[in-house]
Amino acid sequence: MPPTPRNRGLAVLPIVLGIAGVVALAILPKFVESPYALQMMVLFFLAVIQGEAWNLIGGYGGQYSVGHAAYFGIGAYTVIVLLQSRGIAPWWGLFPALLLAVLVAAIVGSITFRLRGPYFVLASIAVAEIFRLAALNWKQLTNGAEGILLSGIPPLVIAGVQITDFSSKVPFYYMGLALAVVTVLVTIWFQGSKLGYYLQAIREDQDAANSLGIPLTFYKNVALMISAFFTAFAGALYGLYVGFIDPQTAVGLDISVQIVLTAIIGGIGTILGPVIGAALLVALSEALRSNALTDLLVGIGIVNPASTIGQFLRDNLSHAHMLIYGVLVALTILYMPDGVLGGIKNQIRKRRARAAAGGAA
Amino acid sequence: MLRIENLDFSYGDLQVLWDLSLEVKQGEIVTVLGANGAGKSTTLKNISRLVRASRGTIHFEGKDLGKLESHQVVELGVVQVPEGRRIFPEMTVLENLRMGSFIKSTRPDRQRNIERAFTLFPRLAERQKQLGGTLSGGEQQMLAIGRGLMTNPRLMLLDEPSLGLSPLFVKNIFEIIKEINKQGTTILLVEQNVFQSLRISHRAYVIETGRVVLSGTGEELLGNEHVKKAFLGA
Image 1: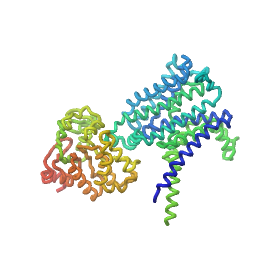
Image 2: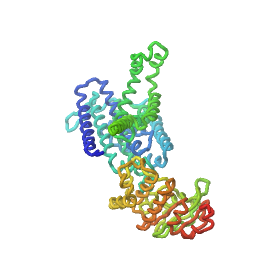
Image 3: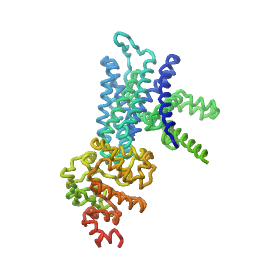
Image 4: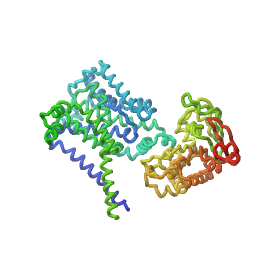
């Protein structure tokens, strides 16, 4: 078969669709004013940033870090602490926050990348827990378990013109969108770059990669540092957006797990996987939180709202998001090991193959 | 070219190599023979610094490998083709080969080396767009060797290249090893296929439980009573 013309068509189509999608998202706040919808979108963008960032080291490099909450928390805490206790504006506070996250990534990577497989995963969890405990107990700096409530963000003024005073969700929407687009672009670059190829070689066979002269720890470290950079950026954005951080919501194990799930459910080691995963997880967690899922089950008539089961679901489902995520991951790994995106691709490939076979016969 | 002296090595409490010494001279094919667990692969891993010995020295062209990392050994011109055809399954044949010219100094030769690999293994040229994982065992072994050649090695360490291959492929692989050697690459071969490997070797060592018990030219060992009894079942 001569696939050349079709391939060229396929290369242009995603670019056009991608630009159209971004433009549509960019003009969305002009038409949609509902704070609830904007809130969902900001959470979606944050999840995309974190998922794509994790994907660099976890998806392409095969190093399943379940400790990305550490970088998320460093980003959030540094910016918020500097703003709240020193009055340093967040756009300046970002520099030390990102620098610190990258530095910590370099140190953590140099130590933990000596470990492989499950041992690395455990070490990454342990590192994040160290940071959570530090945030919990270093009270002078972090205010411990009480957390820090942000009293306000100074208005952003460039050359005498006030750009925004951060009083609505719109500025966060655009910051989230911009950063999400940047992380996707970085991933596209990364996938085709030498660095990306070395990481993929390391994922597929560390010893073989090493036997060709690829210094494993060095390249894993570089990928982790890029990953930490964007994760910390997302953390800072999250802290500013929500206006409140505490050790559980900024450095908790939940965050690490959610980041990994975003990538796994969408499809690891792909450009769009984390985007799809983010959309699914944000929608799901909202459906659980607002009891929409129970309402849906009742609405279809599967569950009787007056019955014990109906009552039980209404009382408990909204707290059970971690449990549901667990089930979801198990299902994904069983039925779509390459994630939703990979699963869809496989279906299309099978259908095409079947069509081709049918055409030939 | 390569000189190993008095190497002792243990995995934890289990000592695997005992006072092991061997030498590979420029231009040779040297085979290390031995049963499972004799310490053959461990010897190769010591050379490529995947593991570190507790005592003894390894010199390559006069340089002490003791303080080097794996990737630095490759830069000196020593490449290991790992046991069990460790290719990158999700990359195409061509990408696998390209990955081989990781070291900066070998990049200008990339195209020439790819062509060389395709000349040695025409089968790889036919399948260059195919994913590595979809190749047959023999083709994967070809790819692993071809990829190793991309590093412009002066010494190539081959760990059981005939493992799990069909008899026809086995013969073919040994012919190609001989050809690579003729083109100027020194070869240290670890094998269980005694007959085929001794036939192409200039010299060979026999290792039993981590000690060198015999050494000599390929022909000498082929005729040796001990070798016949222990390995050839005669």
